[in-house]
Amino acid sequence: MNSKKILFITFISSVIFLLGCFNSKTLVERNKKYAISKMEQITCNKYHDKFEIKYNDIGDYALVYHKNKEFSKPFPDLKYFVYSLNKKNIVIEDSLKAGNIYWNGSYSIFASEREQRAESGTKSYIYDLKHSTYEVN
Image 1 (cartoon, rainbow, N blue to C red):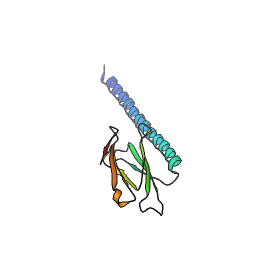
Image 2 (spheres, rainbow, N blue to C red):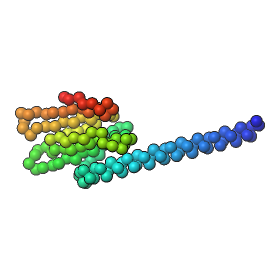
Image 3 (tube, rainbow, N blue to C red):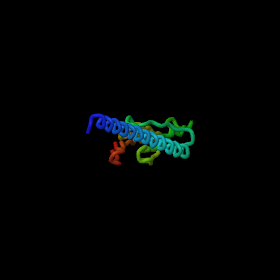
Image 4 (cartoon, rainbow, N blue to C red):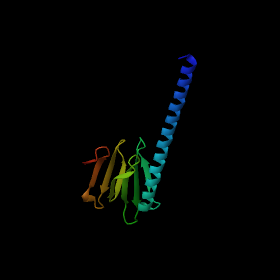
């Protein structure tokens, strides 16, 4: 083979490789946009327009929650779910009286619930998304 043919084949191979990478990235972006759109539909059906979304630091899970504020309660009740953008489904869903929830690392959430009476104390747990396990505190 002469050098012009080798150069031409190398060039064509590089172009095909780059086009494949570009299309793959575009597909991933479209899948993520679709997953977010589906999650927002679910969220609006559940909580209407009063909700917050916090993504984990990797960006593949979303913590969606709604605080039900009532004037008679000093701390609002909370409803939440965690949505997997890769699997396009709800991983965990719960409601907490006088609740609080936040990311406790990339793949775990911390949830706590306070009873309205001071003597009842606080209940809390950490949920591991990767292993689908609870650690009750």
